[in-house]
Amino acid sequence: MNIDFGATATDYAKHRAGFPSSLFNKLSEYGIGLPGQNIVDLGTGTGTLARGFADRGAYVIGIDPSVSLLEQARLLSESVQLKVDYRVATAENTELPDASADVVTAGQCWHWFDRPRAVQEITRILRRNGSIAIAHFDWIPLKGNVVEATEQLIKAHNPVWEMGGRNGLYPLCLQDIGEGGFREIRTFSYDVFVSYTHEAWRGRIRASAGVGASLTQEKVEVFDQELATLLEARYPTPILQVHHRVWAAIAKSPL
Image 1 (cartoon, rainbow, N blue to C red):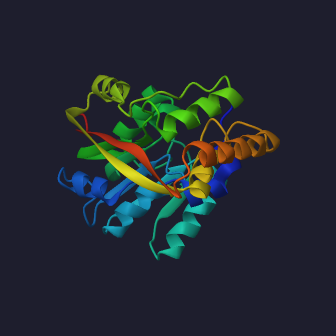
Image 2 (cartoon, rainbow, N blue to C red; image 1 turned 90 degrees about the vertical axis):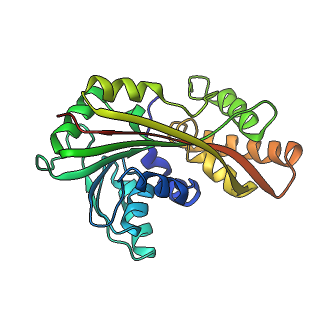
């Protein structure tokens, strides 16, 4: 699949639920996201992690290759009067100085990176005893739930999509940072339910890799109408409670 989240930037900004505040509270227990820290958020997208850290008093640089997503990120930050320095660059080449970050984060994006090169770049820009935090916030398909039904519909419209049926856990990240020499690796996860109206869930799905970021606009519209029909028929309650899982890996920089 050719993935371009910039093609769905508006839906992405409006409908993709940001990380819950509980994640930032949990990360702070590990010394991540504290007031005054210099944080670099890779693959920042519309800035969900970046804004959360800025709101807690950190100095944040948000890095992303998509101009369209960064435009949405700036608008969202301005709307809540938060200052984030958004820059067009990549996780593999941030163009930042050596040893300039206390913390490097990556939310919902590690799998899109050239991971060995990203690890090298993170090691370069982290200060001594700096920290990395890789976080995910995924919908969870379970038998009979709205996520499972939605994923089946995505697959019907986009057969090459292979990101369904996941459990929200990312052991490959641990291998990546372990092989990169990162220390004191720890993980945590917990489940939450996110409320969506039918319209908002449709928008969230349009903003996903398997739909708006990879299908033509015409095909997206056909899919969206079929999803609307499915929701009305099988999940008629006005507010959907959608099962999600928060997962994070944290570690200290190599010596």
